[in-house]
Length: 69
Image (cartoon, rainbow, N blue to C red; front, side, top):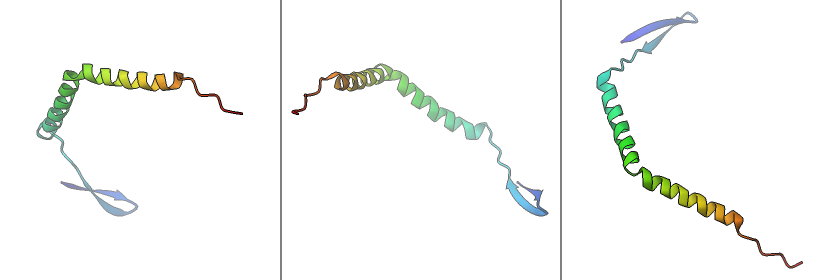
């Protein structure tokens, strides 16, 4: 459906989109699948994040070699 809008004495066509349940259901299905996979592997995701965090923190704690001056 095209609805003309009056702007600066010119007609500008505007397309009105109808977003109904038949367009939203596939989107929510995909979001639900992604969320479900994240929940199934949540323990591993948190463990991986923890391991990366400890590796980064350990690098900062290592003593640096004194420079020969």
